[in-house]
Amino acid sequence: MSGAKPIRVGINGALGRMGRAIAAVVQESPEVELAAEVDVGFGAPAAFREACDVVIDFSSPAGTLAVARDLRGSKTALVIGTTGHAPAELTELLPLAKDRPVVHAANMSVGVNVLLATVAEIAKRLGDAYDIEIVEAHHRLKKDAPSGTALALARAVAEATGRDLAKDARYERHGVIGERPRREIGIQAVRAGDIVGDHTVFFVGNGERIEVIHRAHTRDTFARGAVRAAIWVAGRTPGYYSMRDVLGFSSL
Ligand code: NAD
Image (cartoon, rainbow, N blue to C red; front, side, top):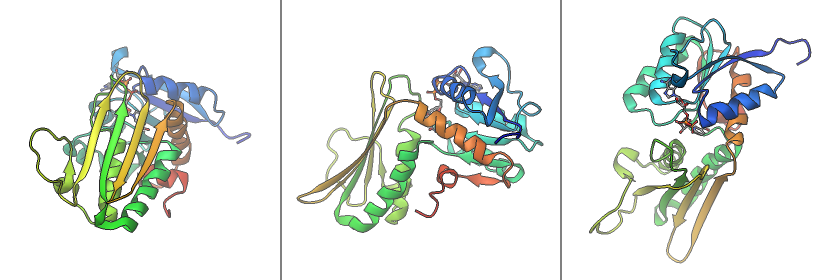
């Protein structure tokens, strides 16, 4: 990197848990410099387009859309880590990728992205005789449920086994629920204390089970991933990319 100008990074949601963790990583990385910090808590609307080569968004679904609108007509790259977007919000985000490179990932950790590929492979090999359940646990302040990562894991196993989440996902059980349909994918959320983020995928057959567990110990793992994505995406060809592209796992 010697002689190269640092990539100018903006953070949307700068006052949040992730925003603060990302600012700390940016400050210790010579390839990037902190060019703008925006948060509703500062009272200012998004204003990134002149100042930044890349904006990292860890805010709220409305916050992602505010950035998207602010960046219209610019080439500024975007890294979206925010989760919980409604389908209509995702539809509004997609055209962004025509003008600029976008990395959008519900989880920026290396481990979870390996997990996504691994659970798809396990699901494919085990087939319908094994029931699939996903349990996630997060801190009490998390706003969306289930987590974006749990949904990404559910999508990965559904795609690998030809299931349709619109039909086969089961988000809660209560009362007399009857027998479990074979192709159901259960997705349950625990909210408690200060848990950074745990995900377990169960594959349970008759007489045995596999449990694949990922536990994030610290938000730094997501923050480092977000900064790595920003460095990777700056100046790239316009398009919608995943964290697996950033990490070079696309062929897993
Ligand atoms: P947080 O509540 O601590 O922080 C969010 C910040 O965004 C707050 O300071 C809030 O004031 C600000 N904000 C909200 N709406 C805004 C808007 N319209 N414009 C500007 N700022 C706005 O939450 P957090 O724990 O930092 O998580 C933020 C998001 O990132 C959540 O959606 C969470 O699920 C997601 N997340 C993703 C990953 C990943 O790896 N992709 C990891 C952890 C968290």
